[in-house]
Image (cartoon, rainbow, N blue to C red; front, side, top):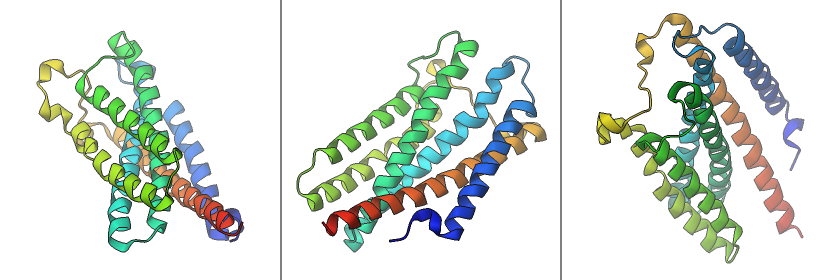
Length: 223
């Protein structure tokens, strides 16, 4: 199996994603406007929300891959599920880091046990358990199928997080609900650009990680 970067298409995607990511950060820091009551904390929004978005997409892919593993009985879907779970959890960690950074100047405290934050933390911890389960070893086929089942079950928490503002009373909600369509164009376009760049970065990372996992499995099979 050739190296990932020996493929010109893969290399170009990486270069493009890296350049656009830097452009996105520069735009966030220097050009996005600051809301009067949030100032610099507002800029966290352009990282926090896209990180949550790609994290949820990652977990969606884990769920789909789990179903495909059961339907097709093809272990390549397990490679995709593992890679997507790892990358999705990385971005969810960014959500849990950037959230308190925003909350400290706005709420006066980095953490409040409100529904959306709490359910997000639960999802993150669930996937920590997912990785621990996979690391315990045992019969590889059984581990793959049980991990697929765990990945399917875990996704149930994603719509709960997304719809938490409808599930719980407004009095216990602290998370800001922002209607993006009503935002000024300079905020809306910057947000959509950041969302697109994070999505592209996720796609490149997923492709690279799947390649690494399959290369590792191939080397093990040849030992």
